[in-house]
Image (cartoon, rainbow, N blue to C red; front, side, top):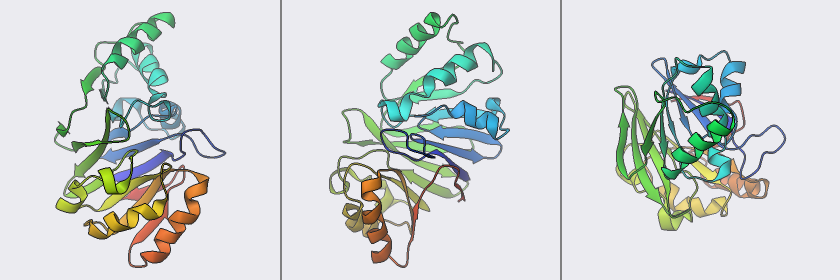
Length: 239
């Protein structure tokens, strides 16, 4: 499994950092966790065939995690017609909104693009990638994702209310090779107690705000035996 960070910023773009978007590559397939930027542009820039995208998983329906879906479904509807991904949304009302918007743009939502509603529990299994959704408290309808590929696993926390309140317990219960956590809504040092209880030893910060960088560096200092990394746009990680 390979992760490539297309967007690592918090609620707004910053110089050299787009809003949240992470590409997963496994066995020739591509998957996205969040699409807060024009991810399709980045696929084209990297020479990655759009029809390799099998699924998109949105953690919650804030614009910095979902706005890129407009371009994605637009171009898949009239140009990249061999692509037929599944798009998993916490709020299925977005499907009709996307459909109406595409009509305004002069096209129609192509029926081969499938949509699913995110619900807690096992959400997806295509024989390559398994995704378990875990409810969080960031919004009334937000989720973390526990992703498994060929014996390896990554927890994407999504945005949280506070680690003590809603850090996904699956990281305490299941082997976890990497935890990809947010750093925008509370001091990163608040993660220290839950990191200590998790089974992971690799922790990457995504969706972090500049004010939180000193706190993330403090986490790194207090956990010298773990890998603590500030993800940046373009960074690629093998799991």
